[in-house]
Length: 366
Image (cartoon, rainbow, N blue to C red; front, side, top):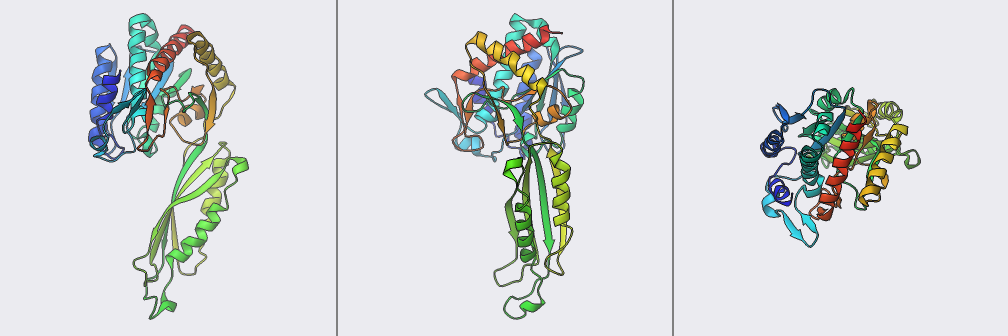
């Protein structure tokens, strides 16, 4: 498992690096085919290809794991896979190349010990989760329909908790056009796009209501041409999080209302984006599936806990179409998307066993 993990981690597969994602996909495709799965490659022109991996004719379980990371080309060479004590380090080691290894080896374990269970599981490996799953979302939703369970392979939290709820996610971009003039010679003839954007940022941030689970944050701004020029252009990129599905329409409408009129006369505003991930809600179906996992965990000596998180994942898509969904089924680790990202090596086998037992139990219910 560690040898495969090292091989995957040492391949740059950032979301914008299609060649690297497809290299990872090629390795995994071959490994799944070796144990009897059929692998359909859904080719993409810009992002990484998506893989649909199937064994039986009528699978009732869908498992989803992404192959892309957030790291730029060259990162794997700068800080390749390393082991220090019981922890492994490297770009994407826990998010989520460790999960790819755990999922594959859970399937290999079932192939050896409970091959009938393989007929119940279908796997989607996608190549663009870190940028919003634009190409893979329709694929996930297509194959999720009719399934009884969805198992999402994001890593477990630092304390080993699974994820049973996630906030919905939105991305918006606000583009403002003004008029450039020299800020010293004829400032009265200029129209500041930055000035207009400042009004919009204040109004957008005012939509935040932490008690209701709504947050609106302008995380990136840009604009202007020089310090002595009235800014002709400006832009803001906005992150939105919501707790409940019904909040999506309301927050979207408010954002569009704010951006529909100018505070600085003469500026023009263009708004792009929307809510792109629905919330993953912890409902009765989720709780029932969690209880099954807890029971399996007890048998393996693993105490299972669960948490809600503000981060997004592909679990939102399966949950939104009504499928009992559990996320965080990968190995234990933390500090994702950073140079300190790590994986707890003992959890590789522990969580692989948990996943294999879970798939076996769910398939036996058929």
